[in-house]
Amino acid sequence: MGLTLISLAGLCVAISNYLMRKSVDVGGNTKFFLVLQQLIAFCLLFALGPGKSGSLELDMDGVALGVLGGVLLGVMMFCFGRALEKGPSSLTCTILSSSSVVPALFMALVFGVAYGYQFHFWHGLGTGLVLLGLFWAGGASLEGRRSEEHT
Image (cartoon, rainbow, N blue to C red; front, side, top):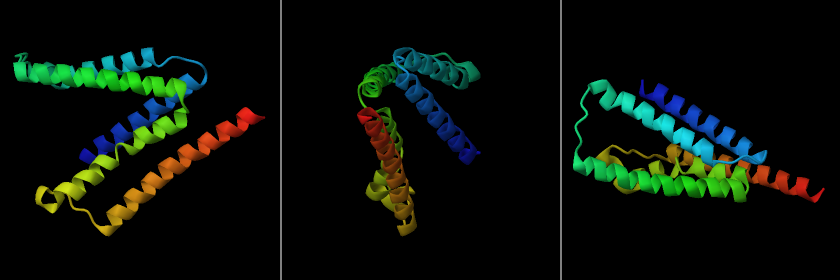
């Protein structure tokens, strides 16, 4: 079940990045897309959490953590939207995609087997190939965009 949910989440993120990138490439704006994405995420999390359990009690520590996390997420999404509008969207999405690989690698290297993060040679090779592929695809797209601008 976990692998299915991870695959579904990866597919949704890829589709989301693709649609946002295409929207910006045709001159669109990221603000509505990001607000809609956050609204859908809020509704889904509410349906899975308090809506499912029926418990609507507020814990002030949880509320403070939620507000802080929301502010940080809002700042990050604002910066992401500006990066998509101002810079090459292919490279922005490549860096965003690689950010899902690097934390897992960091946790495996720092915490190790004691916390259940096993990391072998083949894991390192696979991680390296994924990062290489991401940046190669982003760089190739960036080069194609530069050659179109010069013609």
